[in-house]
Image (cartoon, rainbow, N blue to C red; front, side, top):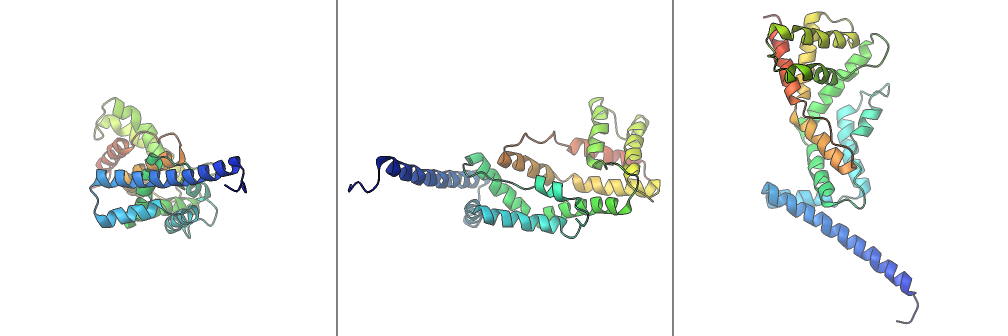
Length: 241
């Protein structure tokens, strides 16, 4: 009123205050939506609200601790730098309700001891492959190899225990053997079976889906569960008794 501030300065201050209020209301709406959908208890609602209110530094520390638990001590050669970066959520300052809700669920998932163990086992397998050496050239994710080779078999309705599935199994095993040294065929099959059973955890896909929402990325590929299930059944049928 004393004209110590100009009208544009006052308008800018009000706009900034409204931006903060909108962000708070958006966060609260996301929490309440999640509570209503899940039928959460008051304790669970408090946890979700706490996760939603974390600062950028606090979110970074939370995810850093999760990734360190999963990959710590395994990345001597820098093998996991890109993977860790690709698993890091970046919640924008102007996040919408869907992104805030996805962040809450992803943060909860990152604290799940069983999910952490799944990621750690897969990281350990990859680290073991790298330590064993083998032929030069890029290593292919065995899960991706299985998805690519099994997709046509699924479309054709081919039974995993059918003799006609033999070429599919052999093609995958040949590619996998290319990246793993000093293992005989039976050990290779047991190793791949363990990897696929671990990778076939639905929480891995859910993490990728939530990450895509938070980071505004394209959604992940189709659910790999049918391909993993088909191939593990095919592989078990061809293991020695």
